[in-house]
Length: 334
Image (cartoon, rainbow, N blue to C red):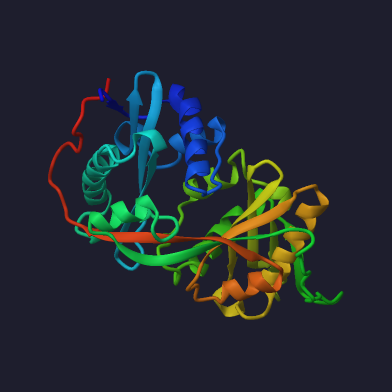
């Protein structure tokens, strides 16, 4: 094969969407994207497309891609790198995936060292269900299974509304998401996920990119606030933020509760409101993804609302060594 390796450009996003949606079907991930969403992703904070992405072309056909992200901040002194990508079904087992990983693992060492000099680093990659080809390749390259995640969904006939009630004189109030709360929620998110595996704190720019994205659904997102004695501004205790990647299917992307407020049913109440609003607005189902070993007992919260598991995936991790190379390219972009 005479394949061309390049980086992903603005004009490539339609071909990128077609390949990504092909992979969603053949790999049973249901991760479908529109070209507009991938264009936003291509220019998210910290992304350098000419260095952090790779496109594989067979003539005018995009047959493989990969992209890399490095957390802007350390978590417990670790620089976290994630690599995502895929190869068209017809082009697998021909070395394409191996070359993509060679390129981006080298870039991972370089960029991590630039952003976080002296800090240890690890690369994470998704392997889908056990036995999937991506997982087999990960293990062949020295990655080890590090965490298991479940995709869960609930439909109208399965939904069980939360029984938690907020009294009329209660200091607690459920509100729809609005930008005025963005910074308070971002800080709470960083606190809430500080004890979650694989998470890194989000910067203000990253939070703005997420909540201003085309797919973000403020109208189907909720926050719980508490009036503070002597303070004009309530404190945010919990939040559930939603997106719509697939038409008529709501995806709850972020759920969190202040650590001193866990175990009180707040997340379940907010999610219950989100699900009810989504179903009333015509969504056919609500989905989310959860760490099976979540320290908050999130799986139980979701099951009580009627969520059930639709698929299980594996996150693989490998520690990486530093590289002093000035360039990580093993190809010359066109």
